[in-house]
Length: 104
Image (cartoon, rainbow, N blue to C red; front, top):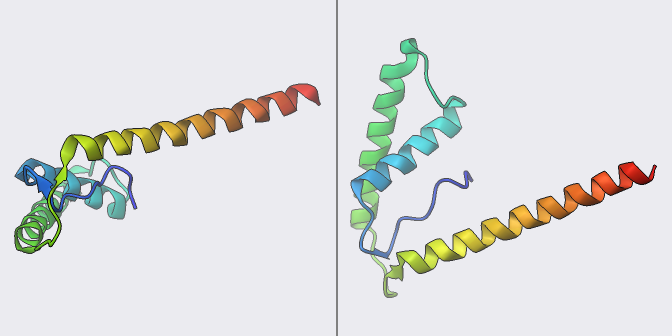
């Protein structure tokens, strides 16, 4: 799944319409393969984003949860930590690769 799309369910405060739109935009970008549609595709692209954002809003409004809402900042910190771990592992890999090339 696209890393830019984050879970929106069961947070306090609830997800905003802007967050639903942003998630829909990322989804449409991912499945269409384009970040900026051409003028010929702009209308259909924007319509898809609006329809998916609308469906996302309805989904989030109708879902129920038996557990207390999650804290947004705490979850964001967890995402930042996972991202830092990923990039640190990538940096270490690249350094080993450069060292191996230098040794050859």
